[in-house]
Length: 412
Image 1 (cartoon, rainbow, N blue to C red):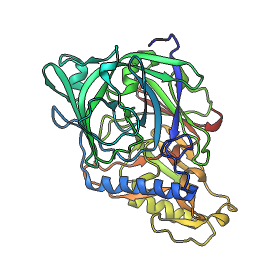
Image 2 (cartoon, rainbow, N blue to C red):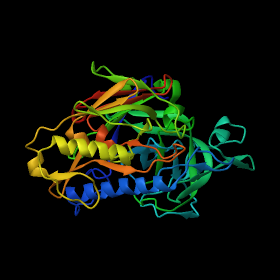
Image 3 (spheres, rainbow, N blue to C red):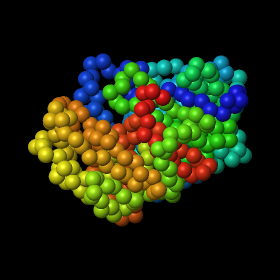
Image 4 (tube, rainbow, N blue to C red):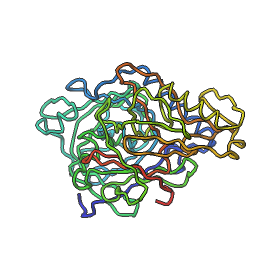
């Protein structure tokens, strides 16, 4: 790292923020929530069809269960010397960092200039003898390490693995440079990628993820604090190293556990409690994912939560074509709503109503979608980003820990 500072933070921009190139001024806040709900429904429907036991299935293929078009949060990274600025998806559900590169023979239409490795003095192809070559499930030709990523919706990215200098413009105005980051230089990318995105920054637990490669320079720690959707003018924060440490006395911590994929941040879902009622859970693993909007829980779990809330809330429900339990927003805001406690291993995360209801079209609806349960546990439950808003959520890969602290993220 080109600085002695072991901690830094960068802006994390939600796709619907006015700072995002995805921002559509013709979309109302209701339109934005509806679209976000549809992205979560698509994710849930995809999970019904996929049986995934591992990320690397063949020596030359790297499979990811994310859907390429599901962009939620973006970050800016500068690649090479001189630097090319790219806006990429920040994804806790994948490992490899890749961006489109010249020449790109068969790539989706990207609105911004592609990275040209021939113009960078710090670009180096990764040799087949490098440990990262095998870690990324790559194949070799002419002593060049090649990668291929297949996404859950059929989208693909393939090209050459290389090492390059990456520079991050931090939230305090300083630049942090990191040498020899392994990334995928894509010469083919096809499918449902958005033209405003220039690649994916993998923030998963695998050895090729950005946080793993930053390694000891940041203590293999990172965190984020997601501002509410209503804060359109404010960016969330993605923190590394000492900036990801927790001083909040109310911090809760638990161990990460092995799950359906080594990439995912999986914890034990020990209990869900609403008031003085416990929800009966059949399978107890859940993924913490910033890239999914709503919580995805098994049908029976969502049914129980909805039934208990309906007993607690003395109001008539209203219908919605997509979500299960809805009320007239103006009425629900006058009622005191119970908290929902998620016991995640040894951590208790208390969700207020803003973390489990979403407001749109004059309604407030339960921010959960039911998914089917597979016999082998390969269909995963997800704690989505609505549930994580106004929490400082941190991950320590060396210690295998995850941290939660209630926080006013706008003030961070």
